[in-house]
Structures are given as structure tokens and as C-alpha cells.
Amino acid sequence: MEPKRPSGATPGAVQEKHDFLNPLKSVDTLADLRKGYFGNGPAEFVRELAQPTYTSVRKGLTSSKKFGLSRSTTVLHFLSGGEFPICDSRVRRAIRRLTGGRAPNTVEWYLKAFRDLFQAIATECGALTKRSVDKALFAYGGKQTRKG
Image 1: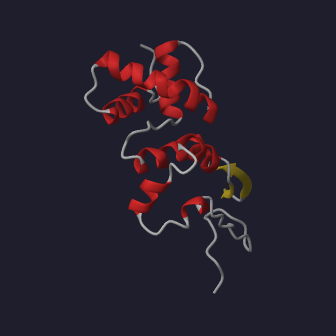
Image 2: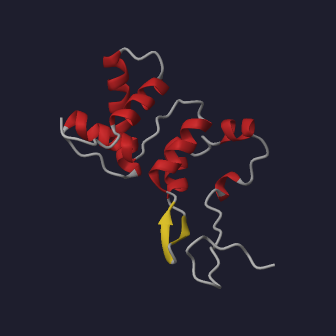
Image 3: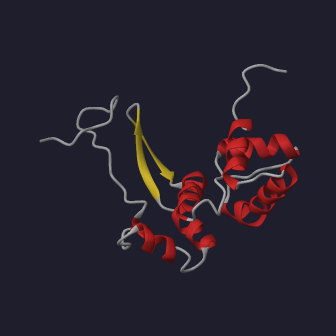
């Protein structure tokens, strides 16, 4: 049986599978993971998880992509029980709109600036949960459909 190829891929092209979650493979249970992911600290966890690459095949074109900041902070957010905020493109767009400043797509910016900024926003808004701030930034960072 021939491996399934992505729609739009040329005949004979097989999408490679990369195990970008390999750092998580040795964990037996989610509880073990929650206890152990701080082994080298959450900063190192995000750095390590953001780096691996995988091959993407789209419309017959192959490209190499990083797991990246968005995915690694999302994993960290859920593994930490919401202690660490998610930082994806919509959140970075919201930060640019709120501050008029930069919001780089880098692990270092997430660790050195975003987390403190996120906490300041939560405090200023009187947010009851960090998740409510996550959701608000995600919504505010959505693409605007018209000038207003």
C-alpha cells in the first residue's frame, strides 16, 4: 500500500513525517510531563520545542518549517495549566496595536518582554484569569476587515 500523499502533491511524492515533539516522547503520563517539563526551566522548554523543523508539502511544493514560537508556547500554556501565555501571530498583532511597538516572533522576546507585558495588561484590566487575557488578545489581534 502506497503512503497517503497530501492533496495537490505530485504522484510519487510522499510527505515526510518529522517527530518535532520528540522531547515529549520519554514521558509516560501527562502528570509526569507537568512535573518534569521544568527540568531545565520553562524558558529552555520553549527554546528546545521551537527549534525542530518539519517538512511541509503544500500544493506540490515542499518547504522546511520550524515548530516555532506559536506552537511551542501553546504546548507550554496547556502543560503549565495556563501559567504561561500563548503567543501567536494574532497575539503579536494585538500587542503591536496596543503599544505601537514591535512584537517579534522570537523566543527571546517572549521570555524577556512579552510575559511581563502580558502580566501588566492582566493587572491593568483587572482580569480574573490569564486565559481571559489570552482570549482577549487573540480576538483583538484578528484581521480588520475595514478601516474604522
